[in-house]
Each structure stands twice: as structure tokens, then as C-alpha cells.
Image (cartoon, rainbow, N blue to C red; front, side, top):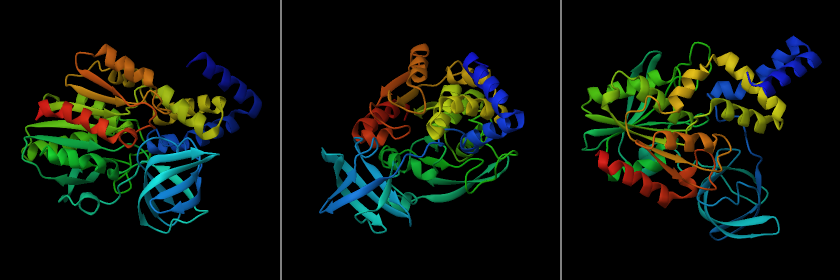
Length: 372
């Protein structure tokens, strides 16, 4: 326990009583431990101020002025996609309105900016043929999307917390163009799978078994090698799998988008952002560790790349508010024999492709081509 955390614990326990202190810690940590990390903070909504042909005017917030392509979502399952910033003035921002797909976008609508520019499945969102399959996992069947390809190397895609398999949709066209078979998987705790025994996420320590089952499935279906591709904690799960899998020699590479490599730093950031209090952030991290039983020493070893034996593309934002940039830079420096770091400035956590689609796809293509 760090000294700062110890001071918070002592002060809180003395001021509120042990029972109330424990209850508060549980409450503060709830969203983080339920999702496995990285999804506790919900940014405030923006408001639509005006609409015109091919454009929408929004209140200016850190999310609405961010470069790139994003979704606007609102109550009633509303969904639209916005592109480049056209003008920013007087507390308002005008963005290109690329498409409004569902619901009615009207002046006065409160919207949330999200990275989910594609919704549905590979066929409905992209026109890509796919098969719905079920991978047999330790806790039951794990639904997955399988797309065909002629290469002997398969790509297994692992979404992050607070997301689902749709997170992989934007990269599927490039993987399809490279003729790579793909398997977009789910894991314990997802909406359509069985939860872990305690109902909590474990930051990769248990979830890797489900991704390992997907690797086993791919190999049984004729894959010669497998590339693991994950976002946020999904990338951390990929690292656990690469370190622990029975078939680790068959893992050709990893793509790590915004991986959670500093457990304490990430959980403190998320609980601090969610509760607007550094002291509660410390308390939330302490409670999350106790509730999940995460082995911090083991987590740190996996995150350091000590067990890494395959090349990895590490995509990360220096401005990531969730997963500290310093941990990504440290991994790239300590394992510069295998890890290539591609920074994406001014990008949100696990929304790197939204900020720079062309640069992201080019880095991905350059990394994957030698592995084909």
C-alpha cells in the first residue's frame, strides 16, 4: 500500500467508521470491478444547437472538439456519425455530419460523443460475410464472429470493457483486404456469456482463459498462427494469453490498442474521474484490489513484457486519460526488440482510430504484412 493510500484509509476510517468506510469503498469501486476496468467515467452530454445540410453545431466540450470521426448517440437508440471540425467559435463547434442512421437528431437533443461509429455485425455494418459461431470456454459457450480469409494466420480480436464485439468492426475491412481470417470473440462477463464466479472482472487474470479457448478453436480450424488484437483491458487480456497459453509458440504477434499496463494508475484515474475526488480515487483503487484479488506483482510482470516472445504493435495516446502513457513508453523501451510504439496524440482511450483513421490503418498494415 502506498503512503498516500494509507493516509486516505486512516483518515476515512477515523472519520466515518469502519463499516461506512468499507461500504463507501465498495460503492466507489463498483463500476470498475464490474467492467474489469476502464469504464467508470461517463463524460457529460453535449447539446445540439443547430443543424444544416451536412453539418451539426454542438456545445463545445473536450469530446466535441476532438479531431477525427465519432458517433453521436442519444436516448431512444439514436445514432449519427460526425467527421471533421469545420468551425469552433463562441463556445460552439460545427462538425461535418456524415450520416444520421437512427432516431431523429434535432436542435436541443442531448448527445453523447462515443467512438462507436459502426453498429451491428460485420454483415449489417460492413457488408462482410461472417458466421456466428460459439467457442467452447470453461464457463460455457462464447459467441464469436468468424470471417473467412485465405491466409494461414488468423486474427483473434478482443474488445475492451464497456464495449462489445462492435469495437472490432472498424478494423475488419483492412483485415479482410489483407485476406486474413478473423475471430471476434466475447469472454466471461459479457452480456451474452456467463459471468465469473464472483461476477467481477479480473483485468485479464481469468478472462485470458476464454481468449485461449478462441486460439484453440482457430488452430483446430486450420490456423497455422494467430495474431491477438485487443483494446484497453482486452489488450491486457491478449498479453496474459500470449504469456500463459499452451499454444504461445503459435502466436505470431500482438496488436495492443490502449492497453492497461499500470493497474493502480488506471483504477485511480477512473475512480477519481468518476467521483471528482483524488481521495475517493485512492479508496476506489484499494477497494477494487481487495474485491478482485488481482495479483499486482503478476500483473506488473505481464505488463512489463517480461514474458513476451512475439512482436507487438503498441498503439497508445500520450493524452490517454485512463491508461498512463508512461507505462506504454516503458514497455516499448524495455522490450524494444519486439515492441513498436505508435503514438496517436490527442486521442481518447481506446479511440485511437477515431482520431487518425488513415495513420492508424497504415501502422496496422505495416505491422501485419510481414506476419502474413
